[in-house]
Length: 202
Image 1 (cartoon, rainbow, N blue to C red):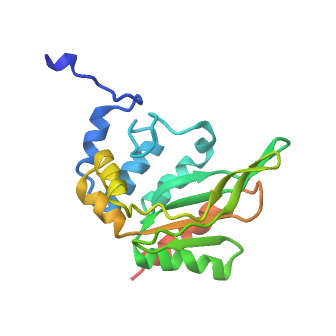
Image 2: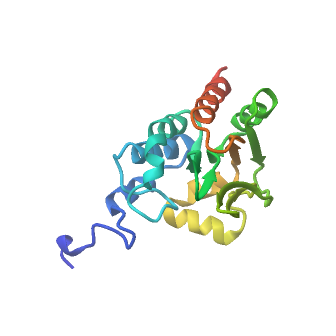
């Protein structure tokens, strides 16, 4: 097969060249930087996100999320707060980090009204805190660990990134932070960033 005949994108439309960079990301800082670039439109590949770009509701959060990723929090999921006739959302963000960063993020729950759920490495915990409702139906919950614990989970992360990062994520803390006020924005992400910067201080 000639070079020009090799596919440029995977089946999800993600640029394979961008995927190649993830093969070299072996630290949380490296994963965070690549995620920040994706949020800023500089990449079309994000592990575990099976589309070349984030969805429309993430747009207003993208710059703030990129900053979190550059300050020790490799984000996994997020959503804005929304209040509408058809349903509502609580703003939240989740991600992987070190033990020291997890402790500082957990402390947010002691000095603010924000709610933090911290999952230790290897912990297969599961709870159900509603963060999205459609009508009267709960459609999204937080409280479950996303740490790759099972062999299959580690293999999935390795295929999307590399073996070293998959094992690092298995040994990292997974933290979920949410704003308990339905529909509110502008409080959560600045508070998380402040906690991350505090955690980085010597």
